[in-house]
Amino acid sequence: MAALNPITRADVIDLDPSTHAEERVQSLLHLWFSRYFSGNPFMTIAPDGGTEQKIFQQCLMAYQETSMKESPDLPVIHIVMPDRNTRRRDYNRGSIGHDDEWMIDVMVKVPHGLTATSMPGLSAEHIATRVGGQIEWLLGSTEREALMEHGFTRIKIERPSSILPASVWQSRMLVFSCHTRREQAAKPHA
Image 1 (tube, rainbow, N blue to C red):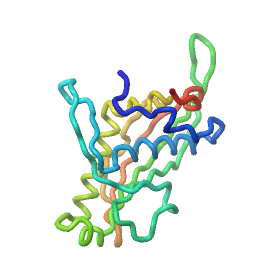
Image 2: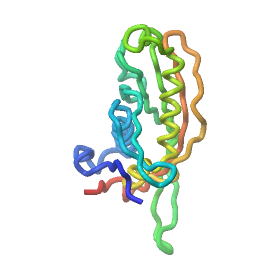
Image 3: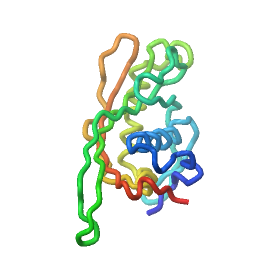
């Protein structure tokens, strides 16, 4: 089944195929998450096989911890890639290829002061929990077909969204794993 919200060649035209694998995977994930957490509605496959409209919380996307603004005016989603394993596997009766296996931390961070200004009436914990649930849904939904079209396989939540203690932030983190096929991850679709 083709993704309803594909990542097109125009989206990834600046991602040089010679880019280091970690940067490429992180860039594709950043692009994929940012499409859904823009605050705009999107269509997706409903449980009955039809389509339905969803809208997720608008969030800022950040690479690792260092790229975050001091006082963001929206919740922040960090994509952190702490581990990578390369595995050999057989292709088509004997030819050898490589999989990269990734363990990826996704952190949702909501400043406690944010809810008093731009989101009155909502607690930081409520917002962080909601965004964490939306990320879990996304990783298990048909929307991940958009990543699979770019060489991602075996996307699996390893640790569900859970609260992290913090003084300034209300934070949640989930961990998921995936594999990328080097041959396909470097060749975005038209």
